[in-house]
Image 1: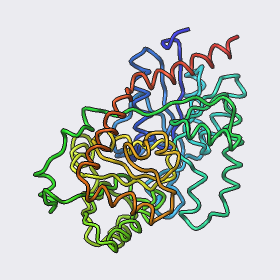
Image 2: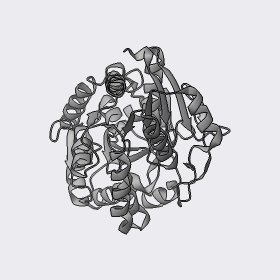
Image 3: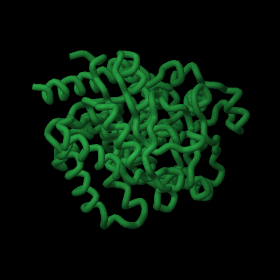
Length: 384
């Protein structure tokens, strides 16, 4: 059996309508699979004006606006619906790939189990950590239990870091868990993209040290921790500036929490590479990522990284070599890690260079071939 024999039905809660790290990875995977001759059909909510064109044939599923404050740009799939299920029946996949434990994902798993079609689940975010950012932390055990039931009904899982694989194993989410890490586009993210003129246009002087945040401006990205760490640096009178790259529903909150911060807004493609390389230090306090694409992009751009000691960064950042890993909510420790980079040019360059060298190991084709190999293994097992 070869990749060209695969007929893959991919289910995503957000395939292309709002750009994020998870759907960037899924679209890159789809492009790789189609290039290898596989048949692919994607089932996801569709909107009139998506953030970017979908890779592959996209079939819409019933959905509503996400009923969570601050997440209105996302859609909640309500299941397959008659039209999508009929399309799935006609497509006759020999692999189901689910990337979100939403109602459409659950329906896809039920469809597959009735027909003996193997299911691969990819884990992209730590949904069980979300409640604490919305004042409903008591729901975390129930969400963890729901995730455990969902993932144990799949034949195999892939996760983007060894630390996330270990976490899933400890949580009892499955015993067949492989590594599907992430790649980085070195034509976009590279130290050579640094642009002094662009920095000056934002009011950054050539000798200013800019601490960057990159990502959607939503509270679960650790915006409160980022702001508190910056406030602590200011109390210590450590010279620095703040450069925020991204946009989102919590922007107004973040701007109020970081008076004097420079908000560059949403950037993409070459503009994003320029913005990130034009910073000097990357601070990522998020604990919700399973990999942390932005951390890898910052490393490829030559920035030392200060990040939460969590699944999103601990498999990427070598503590004391390419950056520092910090207990997730230890504000003083974040400031302790950031301060030397703000004042020691040689240390900042050395750790940035080490991260850039590490980022060279992440090739998208080699990474995506692992998923294709897992599809083939599951399909062969199902046939035999």
